[in-house]
Amino acid sequence: MIGIRSRKKDAEATRAYLKAHKLMDNQHIVVRGSSFIYFPVTRIDDKALRRLKELGATKVEMQFKASEKRSGYREALLKELGKPDYDNTIKSYDLVGDTAIVDADRKSAVKLAKAIMSVNRNVKRVIRKAGAVTGRYRTREFSHVAGERGYVVRYRENGITLELDIRKSFFSPRLAYERKRISGLVRDKENVIVMFAGVGPYAILIAKEHPGCKVIAMELNRNAYNYLVENVRLNRLSNVIPVLGDVRKTSTGYRQFADRIVMPLPKDGYGFVGAAVSMAKPHCTIHYYAFANSKDPYSHNTRSIGRLLAKFGKKARFIGMRIVRTYSSTEVEIALDFVVS
Image (cartoon, rainbow, N blue to C red; front, side):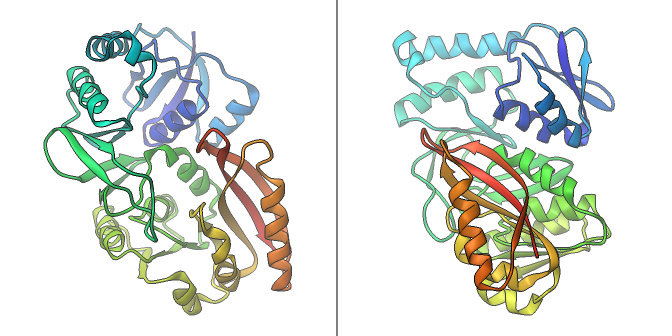
């Protein structure tokens, strides 16, 4: 059967891409070798193979064992929920370190937790989303469901280690592929600025994979900033400079500094494009994120960026556009890669 071979350090990004595009074959078991991890897939096309090639992943033909664990999870869920509720409950969960995060009401979450912990012994706690992402710092409320209490987690992704309090800073494991994609585009010795850096997933990955780069990580949320500083230490990096403050103000210290700028703020990023342009060298590449209508995700945003840059006497040359993930039934998160000229 068809499989995808990935280097161990790139496995999380490969997994995230396959899951996001519904290519994973969940009926079979992932194979872990000494240097590579092999993912079973249901299908693969040329476009997906090109994306995976950017991660160093390749298509292979091999045998995979049937997944008893997956069927065990389904059986456990059916036992806990019953057939009617099973069909109407979100059964997937995010795994951040040893913490499983579910999106369900309290009653259903308790049943999900029992099923998850019965088949995954690495999960030490289950928490649930108790509100939407809101506020200046893009945080959400969580509540304890089962297992150990606490909200500080340590998470490994793409060969880096991140520690964070999930209540006090925004973080999504579902963006692992996007972070790896951006790092793969960086050239060594570039000056890179990551705006809205959070606890450092973009900045730390770029700095680790490109030791010749100088990476400036700007973050407003003091709690996230403190973890950013700690994560730089955990990963033993000397080429990341954490900067605390509003990027509209901190940008003044980095005028015409950046060869590349990352703007991972899809909800309000448009209001900070001016700050990004002020930090851009000639021909700087900007990675801009936005929420968009799923029926026509690019037209409005490309026109808006073009008009805005014209006010600064600049032009945007778009070199890449992609849907990062589905956000709701009508919205998607998109990434626009453009060169300022």
